[in-house]
Image (cartoon, rainbow, N blue to C red; front, side, top):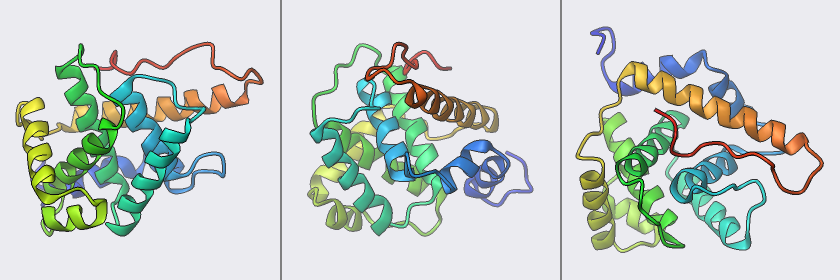
Amino acid sequence: MDLYYNNPVDRFNDLCQGSTLSQHFLSLSSDISPVNFVTEMVEHLWHCRPTLFPSPTQLMFTVFCKNIITRMSVLPTTLFLALKYIHRIRQSSPNLSPSEGSEYQVFIASLILAHKFLEDDTYTNQAWSDISKIPVEQINKMEKQFLKGINYNLNVSQEEFIQWVTYLEGYLSYRSTVQMLTTPQPTTTFACNGMM
């Protein structure tokens, strides 16, 4: 890590500053909000399924994520890193078949870990529990399981983070292209586990 940076969030914020992803994320058009982008990516990465035509279950997950992101004032950089952690856990367990509803747990666990990694002043697990309505004992267990699933590796190198932001930018581009098509179903898919 460059000694110029006092902490990882400064480094990641600088990396994001010039990316089209940050520009898109902070000024996403009416077709996709930042919350919708994050929930689509969680669904895409965790369940490896297209999410451009959300089901009622996915819409409930979007409401859940919006509540967490808004009430906990989560920064875009923290969200990008949480998504990277979800990608990392899927890479370490490619044959995993996540159950319906497990996206709630993986989202919270990855967000807690990203927040703790990037922020000096972070929320307690009890605060996450109060907002998410998931019992603190379960939050603690999810956090431990997630850490084990990524081999306790929370570090993301500068190069890896740049590649990750490029991947997310590619997803936004892909999504825009597919939405322009008049067919109701996309004819191609964006690889969820083939990256890095």
